[in-house]
Length: 349
Image: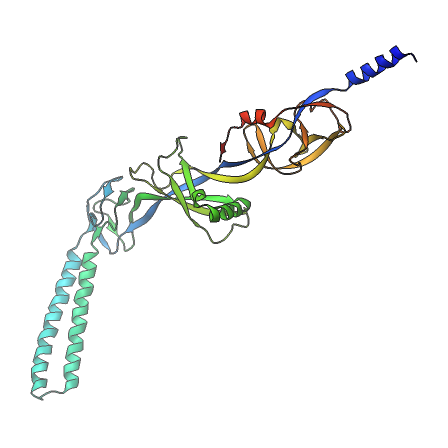
């Protein structure tokens, strides 16, 4: 073969070797926002029930009304309980007179001390009956146990109530308890990171309309047990609600930061999926393509956080993924990671 023919063959071989862009992974400290569906509860939410039987005489409030602690809500017709109190008071007066007479006789040694003690016991019993009747009468006036908002009125004036009849519910929404479920792995991450930095217990609340609630919440409690069927555990965050915007029973989304220290990142476009598994093409020192299985820890715009599968100094193909195959020889143009990071849309720390 002539020299010119050899040179032509070398030129064709060189031209047959494709050239693609590649890069290397890079590391960065960052926090990723995680979202969890949540249920919103007032810090106190109770059922208001009648303590006595009788006719509902008065309703002092309306549905949705804000009430103060001690403010009257309902009144049950008190006539029967007033009569019982008067009878108990009369009995107590009789027992008081009998006790005084017996005491005078005992002081003169006309009757025994046992008879005096018996008279005293009868008087104490009568006074106890008075207290009981006063308590029953006080139950006919139903007052708000705390500041809150009245819900539906479930009875109307003139309704015959039984003991324990539900009249309405009362919600204290000055603060909110917001409940959301967290997977086991994320619970462990939270506990480890929160022990080092309490700022990760602070959360935001996205309301049902997509707007962010203007108050910041704090994770205060975690339930004792995991739900083994779902693999979750319930967190509770507390939010101030000074303007009463949110109500008991609403839903929303908790936004919580998950920190990643020295996370390893690669471009999303460097990956491809086969049977629900994620792969990249690694270019080794000989310029040969290797297919590598990777594990993704999290996803952000344009990038994946890699848990395992690639090393910091390895070269990853970022173009031509559909044109190459494992074992192919390729030339690469190495793209600096600084250029890739210009697309990094996240909250770096």
